[in-house]
Image (cartoon, rainbow, N blue to C red):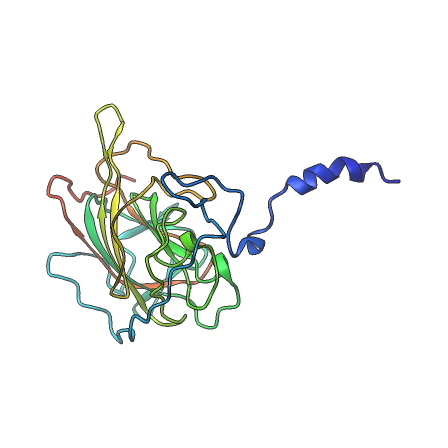
Length: 269
């Protein structure tokens, strides 16, 4: 008899299942504060599907007071983890290519953000492996980007979710390969002088013109399989786009700072 097997069995059973096994969610994660659901709860009802209407043929024109972060030409407003941003730019769009997340050179506090994104056509994966990316305010508060059109995953991880915290009220995803829009109003959290949370971050999100979060308070900084928490930080931070290994494309990204007390200043390298 192989005596190694009995000794290894408890260890093997303690290993988590693969991500693919958890396409529909988890049943062993912590409870979300003030909710009856776990983080990424497999039993949480999925938002109902609504048809957002046809995608626009051309990018929307930014407002005259917007800070244009990507106009289809270059990545000069962005930086990568080791210097210059290196995502592919072609035909007016930039596409994730495995070179890592990119973040804005400028930092923002309260703001209105518009971006347009497109998941790959003819997806071959499911769940969290299907057109996965994300947009992060202050580099830490995420609105999920995912191909959720006809694909099953946990409710707080689908497109337009406040990842790991709240699902969108409805699923307004267009089919893969079509352009989608996010219009987001982000109100930054406030902290006291000694680092205590004074007020949480609040987020309003329209996905393809459909309201899916209405001034919703975030639980904290985005986390996976854990309850989000706040840690004190400054009044402004970068906007980050995630490289999750899927070739998601972006175009027409602009932002409007909403608070005069928070300047939009370049980051130091």
